[in-house]
Image 1 (tube, rainbow, N blue to C red):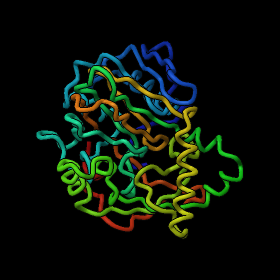
Image 2: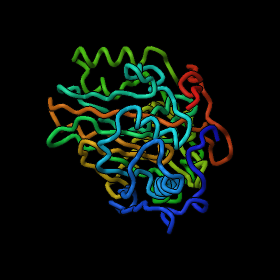
Image 3: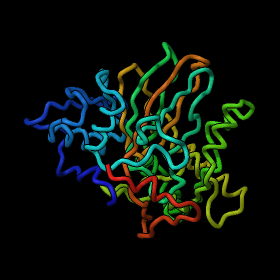
Length: 317
């Protein structure tokens, strides 16, 4: 594994007598609140182990009241989970910290309104994302996540067998932000930056999670077509699997407060913004942890077809 993100569940119990980490599930199949910790680069090892185990078990974990963190503190904590990517393969990082992607969707700019897994258009998408709430509207602007491992497990056996054999082409030529606001100058500018370098990668539709061994569905908004299928059939099959992934039973919805922080396992989730906040201020900052090249159920790795992501994944810590 190219990242040191997570050890096995067996090695890192979610809580024991030596750690103050408390884990409280918030939905049936995904999501938990972790309390009893003050996040930072100096977090005790047993607390980090508890967080890692909770993340593997619940796919996304939430922390309230982390107002003491700034960008540097967020990065210092994220480094405890593994080496960090740059902010994004094409979008510049925040001034002064090229690890931080500044997600400022204030003034009606919307957000990532399509279900997606982060940066799947490169050969090794992030292992995890760490998102900190900076400015939150008084109402609206929630984020939802879906558990792609639970989605796979609850497919009919015949569809699981089909999914195991499928591969999808993922590309950044589709900008999920600008698509919602195609007529705005900001939307056009974001689209230009986002697709300034073309990345295309063929991933298995079902990947084997490198830590848990679970099978997870790897699709989302960057999956543009299924390899070997004509466009109409490809679109129909992607739609079928996507609608199953995002069934309410597989999801959790989080209402942000300033100072909240969320971590999600990018290898076992999709997520999206709920764009119901109009022109109210909404700003969050994301840091991502270097991930692995996905591997199919028959052991074949993903294949990059266009774009070199080595600079994105090549920075140490």
